[in-house]
Length: 323
Ligand code: GLY
Image 1 (cartoon, protein in one colour):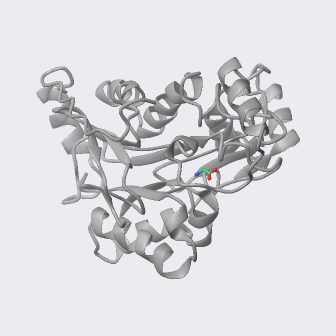
Image 2 (cartoon, protein in one colour):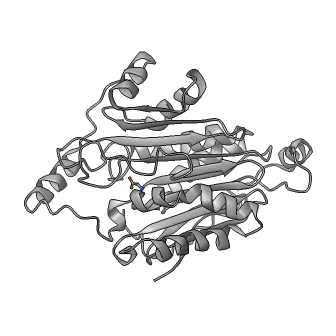
């Protein structure tokens, strides 16, 4: 993706407004009085197209769960996004393997990991949540479940991704590096007109990873966590570092204790920099929103940004950073 390091403000005034009637109706349906916020969508990086799709769902009064699923599917289908879904960079054996999870306002969640040949792992994750007594399906079992439920098997390795793998193979240097292009997981959180929160997270994981490696993105509490009474958080960056600190769960728990989303994201990053050696050489970022609709984001290194959509428009916001 281009322009990632540049601040981009794309307020599109007037194009997003909910009608007064819709707002009034929503306000009366908010379940926890005093905690209501307006509808909002936030997602990692500059995925404005994904936010727009999610916003359309919210604008019609749709569920936040539908919004985040529809939103991240935009990134999954985009071959130019080389860290998510179709067009994602393969592992070191040349296989595109995908991880995704989803969580709703009731704490229900579903997840798939090490899934191959299916373009929309987020929708498979949702079906795991809705149609099975389980939370997570992996590899062949996840694929079998997807095929049984009507998903089509597709080759996800695009020519560009194959070329970048061929290039990598020349040196085959296997070491996580600070490279935000390699970690472009889309994590999305939405608040619906009814005040309910949901989240989704999907990725092709670290480029040229070991075959079988699974990162944080399909792990509830690591790549994503939502608690409807508090807020939600998502993570991007080096999955191993996020898993070691149960990052998204940590951010939500810090918000539960009274921290703002910004302070919670900062503390979660500091937890990594205090406890994990070598943090100077990898990137991790957290993005959070609380029930009041306040957003926060923080990363180890400069370069992380997030897309924020509200009634007034869409904007891409640079996050603060530790180093
Ligand atoms: N955060 C994505 C991964 O490490 O796989």
